Length: 146
Ligand SMILES: [Zn+2]
Image (cartoon, rainbow, N blue to C red):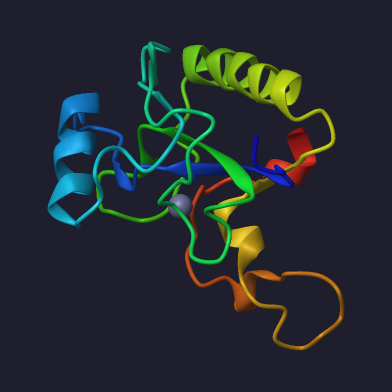
């Protein structure tokens, strides 16, 4: 088993008003040259959870972290005008907790964080602040919740 240091939360960066199915996600990732979905878990707005890439395999979700992390993605993250927003439904929040607990069973010491928390610490103060985020993903503060 790879040594897993992080459990990284993503959003699909799709509008909350748009349906983005697991098969669309897989197709989009394959179009980008990935062999299949780059994440381990995908969570639809209704809470339905899909298993993407196998937990023993290297991922394709965040450069420099694909071999030492698990990745969970929820559907949404943008409001109808494409601005970043925490669009998670109650069902998604519940499913996200389950998904994180499952990952924690496999990697008890892994730190749970958001994609944007992997941005470089430009001013070197030990914290990744909003002005340092390369992306907004996953559009909520993971460390406040988990
Ligand atoms: Zn992301």
